[in-house]
Amino acid sequence: DSGVTQTPKHLITATGQRVTLRCSPRSGDLSVYWYQQSLDQGLQFLIQYYNGEERAKGNILERFSAQQFPDLHSELNLSSLELGDSALYFCASSVADPGQSDGANVLTFGAGSRLTVL
Amino acid sequence: DQQVKQNSPSLSVQEGRISILNCDYTNSMFDYFLWYKKYPAEGPTFLISISSIKDKNEDGRFTVFLNKSAKHLSLHIVPSQPGDSAVYFCAAGEGMEYGNKLVFGAGTILRVKS
Figure 1 (tube, rainbow over the protein chains, first blue to last red):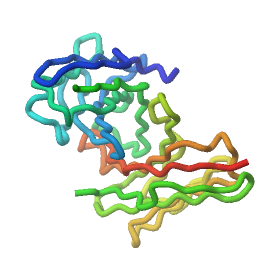
Figure 2: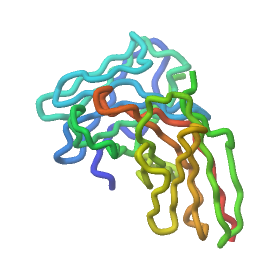
Figure 3: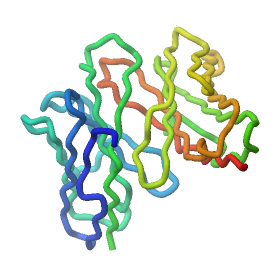
C-alpha cells in the first residue's frame, strides 16, 4: 500500500457520459498529480496541484478538469467521454514544494483507476 | 513530441545475469531522472534516481548511469531475479519551478527467466 488511495478501481461507462475519479494523497503530501496511461503508452502528465492551487498543466483535454480540496484530496472530472478516453488514470502525490531546490523529488503513485468507455 | 524514449518494448534475461534497460531524452533542461517499476494491477513504484550533477548512482542490485552528452541513461540490474519481472519506466524532470512534474517513457517489459 503506497498510501495514495484512488477510487474507483474500475469504471465502465458509455460515450458522452461524465465521471469523477478521486484521489487521497499520502499523509503529509501537499502536491497531487494526475497521469493518464493509454494502451501501450507511457504515463502522460495531465495536471498538478499544490496545496489547493494548480501548479502545472500538461496535455489535459478541455473536457477534463481537476481540483484539489482543502483536505488535499483531489478529483479528476472527465466529461463528454469518448472511446479514446479509455485508459488507466493514476494519481500521484509528493511532499515537495515546487519551489524546493531538492532535485530528487519522488512521486508516490496510487494503484490507478481503470476507465472503460463503451 | 516524445521527450523521453525507451526504444526497447521488452527485454528477456536469464536469472542471475545482468539486465540493462535504456532510456534516451531530448530535453536538455531535464536535471533529474528516475526509474519506476510497475507490477500488474499496481501503480508505479519508485526504484532509483539520479541528479544531473552525477553520472552514476547505485542502490543494491540497481545502478543508474547518466550520460548527459549523449542524453542517455541506463538501469543495470545485477543479478537479475524473477521478482524483477515488471514494466520499467524511465522518467525525467526539469526543475522545481515547473511543478516537479515527471515526463515518462513508454516503458520496457522485463522478463527474468528462472
